[in-house]
Amino acid sequence: SAVISQKPSRDICQRGTSLTIQCQVDSQVTMMFWYRQQPGQSLTLIATANQGSEATYESGFVIDKFPISRPNLTFSTLTVSNMSPEDSSIYLCSVSGADTQYFGPGTRLTVL
Amino acid sequence: AQSVTQPDIHITVSEGASLELRCNYSYGATPYLFWYVQSPGQGLQLLLKYFSGDTLVQGIKGFEAEFKRSQSSFNLRKPSVHWSDAAEYFCAVGHGAGNMLTFGGGTRLMVKP
Image (cartoon, rainbow over all chains, first blue to last red; front, side, top):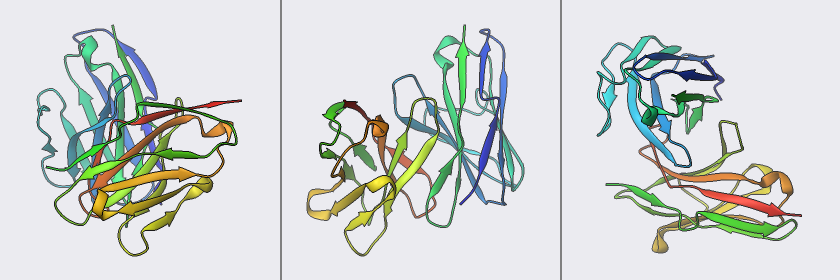
């Protein structure tokens, strides 16, 4: 299994600002994923991040709003740009294991 | 396109009672199916998974799930619920064993004393 940490665990931000969320894994992984969980909702995939290539975004998510970095096999960042209250969510990163996905604890973002 | 439906948004059961959470999926190939649990303020924890073979799979915390291809279902069961089982439960279908997941809407379980 993989152990995943995220920073920050929570934050309260003003609209119009940006927040970068960090995801650290304790082992090298090829594929990392970023999900969003809006209040009271299920998880929606934002993008898939492979090391050495551009992230692949799902329908409804764009790079200008959610730029992603993947500098190495154990680390990734997701930036939520020009935030609005609608961006208030839990953001989770996950990694592929041999037979499943493992999730980080999430970053709870509140935008005022 | 793949999709997952959890028909029950909320379920309340008494402690010690049995539990069944429903999950139906739509997927063009052999599905990789998962159940995750999310406790308040916690991340997602994998309860169990099905890839192939025996259609009744055992998971952690006394949970089990049965894959029924004819019904496109993967229902989660537990014979006797504990108060600590109160949480949000998500069914998901995977695009391959370790690939991205499509989640159902979740079922919130409440346990009465």
